[in-house]
Amino acid sequence: MSRIGNKPIPVLSGVTVTVNGSDVSVQGKNGTLSITTRPEVSVAVDKDANQVVVSRINDTSIAKAMHGLTRALINNMVIGVTEGYKKELEVVGSGWNAQLKGRIVELKVGFADIRKVEVPMGVDVKIDGGTKLTITGPDKQLVGQCAAAIRSHRKPEPYNGKGIKYSDEHIIRKQGKAFAGGG
Image 1: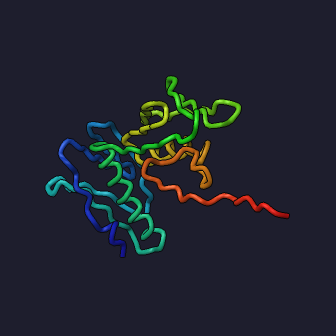
Image 2: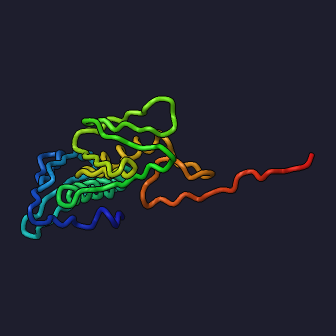
Image 3: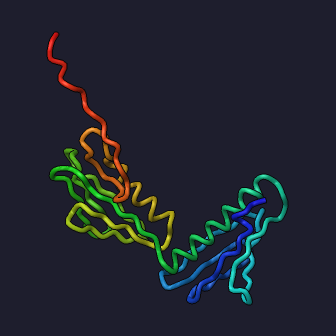
């Protein structure tokens, strides 16, 4: 039995949840998000208790898996349209920086060329001082995917600590090869 799937999702004030067959739409101050649910689960809105309830049709293994997943996705949508999601990145390296030109982030991270990452619609990127990037938006998956795409151009390396890292990420540093001397 799915413990997460059985928890009802509270609908906060200012949020509207609409269920139309297998389509679930959540609307709030940060925009509108929607998903199409699998046929193994059903979603119902309880207007009196101000909550959304996800239930599964049968007890097959795929239905059990989709039960908790669907509940988590809808909960993430409710949080996204009220509070939104944020990822912070830091560019670490001498002379390395990032610039925002329209909807494209240009990265100068030690390569001969400038790496370009297109920012998807629904995601906002702010750059502070050329080295601190803040990625915000209502869709948790899109925010995380955009941050991962930017980070993938130069992941942090353990010897010098240079690269693009999450602001709360700790890089475990390694000691380089010592000079051997004789021989």
